[in-house]
Length: 446
Ligand code: ZN
Image 1: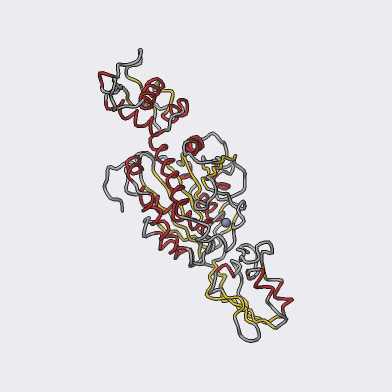
Image 2: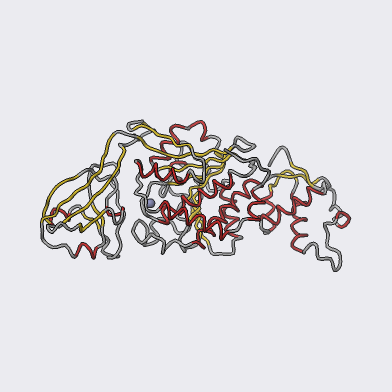
C-alpha cells in the first residue's frame, strides 16, 4: 500500500502548501458531514469507506455482546427515516432535513399521541432557540427528537404521528485502523472519534485532519511506527485497548484529535503524567507558534484520552485541540457547522500537528565529536565572516547551543528548550554539524 520514498517529515513540512491541504480537508469534511453516524451502524461504515480514499484503513467488526473490560459491545443501531407529522400530514420534524433531529440510538416507534405526550420526548435549547441540540441514548432504550426551541413553540394541540424507522439489533461495532511501519516498533498513536453525526468541529474536522495526516505519513520514511484509529468515542477506545493490550505497550507518544477547526486558541490537554515527551513537544510547538494558546493538565473527562490514560494503561497520550468540548456554545448543536469551522483554523491545527510529528521524529540525542573547547566553525563554512550573509547570528546561536549540549545527555528538544530557539532551527543546526562531522548520533540515547 505504501509508495517507496525517502522523504522525511521535515521535508514535507517545508514544502507543503497549507492552503491546498486545508482545501483538501474541507472537501473531505463536506463528504463526511451529511452522514448520520453513531457509535455503531452503517453511518460509521460509510464514513470509513470515504476515509479509505485517503488512508488504506483496515476495517474491524466486533460483534455485539463482546466483553471489553467492564463494558459490552452494544447492539448495532441503524436508521432509515424518522418524522413527527401533525394531523394535516405535514412533517413537523423531519430526519431527512437534519440527522440531528433524531436522538441517537432511538428505538423504533410507530404511534400517535397528544402534544403533552410528545413533548416528553422533545429536546430543545431554550438559550439558543434557533439551534438543534445533539442528543443520544446509547445505553438506555428510549426515543426522542431534537429541534429548535422556536420550532417547538409553533406546535399546537393536536394528535401527532410519531414514526421512527430504526433498528437496534445484534450486529457489530465497527472501527478503522491503519498501521504504518517505521524503523522502530515504538509507535505514535493518532486517535480520532468518528461517531458523531452532522457536527463539524466535533468531529468531522478531526476526521479530516487525521485522514490527511495519514495520507501524508503513508508517503514518508518514518522513525516511529504510526497507528491511526477511527473509532466510536469511549466504547471504541475501550474495545481497541481490550483487544490490543500487548500492542498498546508500544505506544510511545499519542494524541487524540478533535475540535481542530474552530476560531478559538489551541489548547493542549496533557497526558496523565504531565511530563511525557509528547507533553514537552506540544508545549514547545505552541510556545513558538506566535499565537495565544492554553495548556491544561489531564483530567479524567473529555474524549478517548480518558481510556488511554486510565491507570491500567497510563499511556503518554494528550489531546491537541482548539476550544475544548463544552466550552463553546455551538458544541453538540446544529451551530457546529461550516459557519463555525473555517479552513484557516483547520490549516493552523494541521500545521501544528505536523510540527509535533516532526519534533517527535527528529528528537534525537547527539554527541559533539570535538567537545574540548569550541571547534573552529569558520574553517568549516559554519561561521559568519564580516559581511558574510550565509549565516545569521541566530544560526550561530543554534550551532553553539547544539554543540554545547550534544553531550549524550540532552536531546534536540532539550537544546531547543534551554536555548529558547525554535526546534526547527536547532534541527537545521544539527544537520549542518552532522554534515561537517562535528556531531554524531548517540546510540545510547538520553
Ligand atoms: Zn462530542
